[in-house]
Image 1 (cartoon, rainbow, N blue to C red):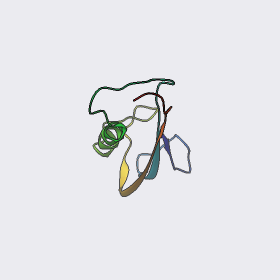
Image 2 (image 1 turned 180 degrees about the horizontal axis):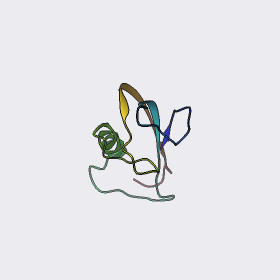
Image 3 (image 1 turned 60 degrees about the horizontal axis):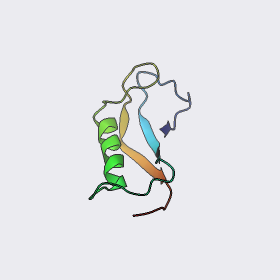
Image 4 (image 1 turned 90 degrees about the vertical axis):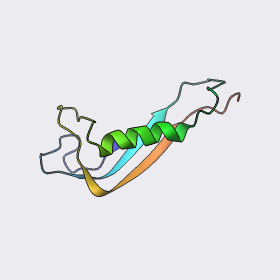
Length: 82
């Protein structure tokens, strides 16, 4: 996860994040997934955890988002098999 803040990964108590990049690296050369698997659902789960302040920064403080936070989600994966 990468977020935009002038202090890098050190957030102050009043700082709210305006944008976040979520990058999911999938296992290389994986050739099958369970029926009904959708990568987007996993990203949605991560975004929900962030919105509900259930994710902590490196110093164990909750990551607080602005009301109009922009998520940029990317999945890095192979196109192999089904």
